[in-house]
Image (cartoon, rainbow, N blue to C red; front, side, top):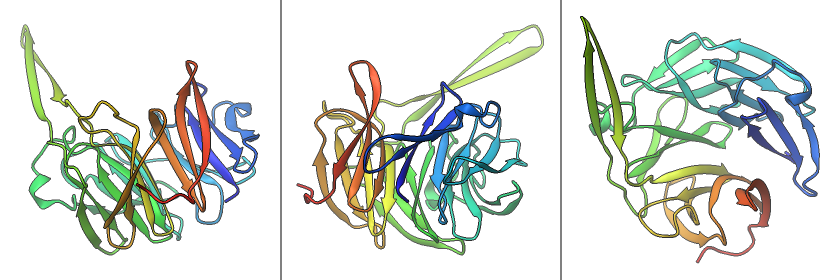
Length: 275
């Protein structure tokens, strides 16, 4: 694709920028009602972009910014992340304990439900096993633990491999507080998360780039690189400022950063090898 896509949750819109010039090609903000706070996006194999929004909708936009389809996900759980396969189906990560991953078609129908690739984590709460997704190829999605020790590659048929982060982060505990008013009891849970492992990730070709948080003072400035075909660690880059989002395409990496109090998209060449 010659475009890089950014979700603007405040404007309820997707924005497409030209990869070479940074110019805005289009925005869905000119078509009100298409999206409501898009939370996760993925490029489509044939061009264009798909998004999940706060209303539980799966929306596809073509490369010119035109609406292709909009479907409600037939599921009572919160859909958080999306990755596209090459046959118009998607891997969706939900906030649920059993079968947190589903393969869904463009109409929002579930074709298959999948367990976590990590068997030992399947009894943990969805808050502890929050997932990030990225498409590494037309038939491979990278599933990454936001908290914890590793990531995995999934194809539609099976788990391809499971790999550790170069630096592991402890999975947080969960604290629950129950309050009672009359006969009604209300339980509120929160995670004791001191450190996030991965803030965001992107995959292109045989490379995976992850924004690693960890426990250092330079949180969000380390970009760890792994091999998409095996999960092997390849090196680490140090960004000049904190990065909150990343997208890679060919020889370019696009970082979403804060600049003078505003979000900014910065393009870098990937020719320099990690150090």
